Structures are given as structure tokens and as C-alpha cells.
Length: 350
Image (cartoon, rainbow, N blue to C red; front, top):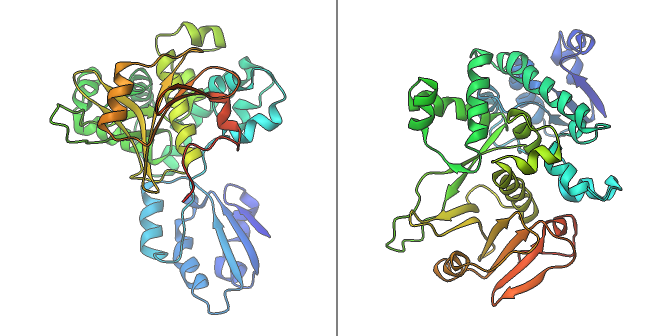
């Protein structure tokens, strides 16, 4: 394997003549922080078109608009994308060896340095540094020229809207800008994996359905830093505690079900009924309600979602321990810790 870190001055110097260096290499070639050398893409297209294909290239970096544009133009049909999330429950739990591993992952988020810090104070310090570096260095390197303070204000405001339906006009008024401008800010955070949108499902029930997407800060550790939440007690006392738990579970469930774009939704009626997450995959419709409680109860909203959306199954994800248990016909309660276990399968395999 050959690896080049494009932030390393030595590797930058080695690639002063990239064709001379890369053309003879064989096997796996890793190019890290590729957004710093977009000029390499035309050469990579040439090297990937060689009939013998002596080398394969693993390109690592941020999903900047310029990066995606250059990739689509130069490497169309030659590249596959893989988005890396933070550490999932199934990855962290086996190595945690702690009784409170689930709450640690929820509080600190999935970024390895934040999650594996010696204590909560060290984790918080790392996340604060990460936020500052992202705003002041990473975004300008990607060609995104916005005042760091402006985007920090929007990001913090978005944290207070976490797990709510998007209202660009409301956020725009709060920031003193247009809804088009805050939409651009959201596009930047989503394009760099700092936020994500969950699209609404339309069941055509004749009722007034929610048509706007829900918005989430992608990593719960970053969310808690933006909300100035330092420890578990602070989290449990915070007004956004339930919304934080919802976002945490939504991401873990999407990861666990391997749901792609166009397979994960939420459903809501303006009258109040709704479903936190709907996965439509492999000719199945599976719903998930997310409750920050150890003893969830069946609600009228759950029964309505089960019937209206014609769900194959409805799972209620809760903060409990032990094995799943049946709550009603078609409705099961599932402890969140089961997301770390390969034994529990929410979707039937095709």
C-alpha cells in the first residue's frame, strides 16, 4: 500500500510531479485530504482507464461541492462513493467494557477522539477545538468563504431546531437573512456531513401531512457542544434531551438497516399523529418510534401509524435493558442496546 497525506509538506513535495510518482505505483494507493489537490483528478481518470489496471486509488476527503463536481466530471463511471459515519454502537460496544457505554456514545458522539477521551471534560475540549477548526480552516480550504462567526451562529441555532421540521423563513428572520441564505448554510453543513435532513413520507390519507423535512445535527457530541451540554446530568436536564435521543436513534437505525437515500423517511400529520422513522426497503415497510423511557406504552399515534402506513412491523426504541418484548399486535419494544447486537434484525432479509 502507498499512502499520501496531502496536508503533509513532505508528501506535497513528493507529488510536485504527480504523473511521475503515481504512474508506476501498483496495488492500493491512498490519497488523503484530496480536496487540497483537485488538480489530480484528470490524472486519476487517465490512470484508472489503463487496461491492466495495476493500481486502485482510495480517495479520502471532505465532500465539498468542488470535490463532487470535479469527481463527476473527471471520474464518472470510474468511482464509487462510501460515506464514513462516526463509530456506531456495534463498533463501540465490544471495545467499551463499561456499563454506561450506551450513554457515553450518546453524550460524546461518534467521532473517535471525542468518544475515546479519558473523561467528559477532555471529550468536550476536543469537540470545541474540532468545531473551531472546521469553521476557521476546513471550510475555507474547501472554497467556502463565510465568516466563521456567522456559520457558528447558524449551526448553534440549528442545534436548537434539532429534530424539528425545517422552517427556513423562521431561521432567516432570527438571523436577519433570507430563507434562501439559511438554506445555503444548511446545504454547506449537510454537504460536509455536519447535518442531515430526513424527508417526509406522503401517505395520501386525505389529512394534512407535514411536507417539510426534519433537520438534525449529524453527531450528538457536536450537538451537545453547541448546546453547552458537558455531562450526562446536564444532558438529562436539558430541554433538547428527547430530541437528542431521537436523532441518535434515527442515525443508528438508518445505519443498522443500511437504508439508502430514498428509503428512510418520517411521517407526520399536522393534527399530531406521526412516526419518527419509516424504512421502506426490500418490499417492506418498517416503522420506528423513539422514546427516552424504560417503560414505553402503546399510544393511539402508534396504532394509527401502523394502520395508515400499512407497516409490516412497528418497533419502539427505548432506553431500557434486556431483550425486546411484545407490546401489542405488530408492535414490539426494543432496548437501544440491541442495536449493538447482530441477533436483532429489524428487516427480513430478501
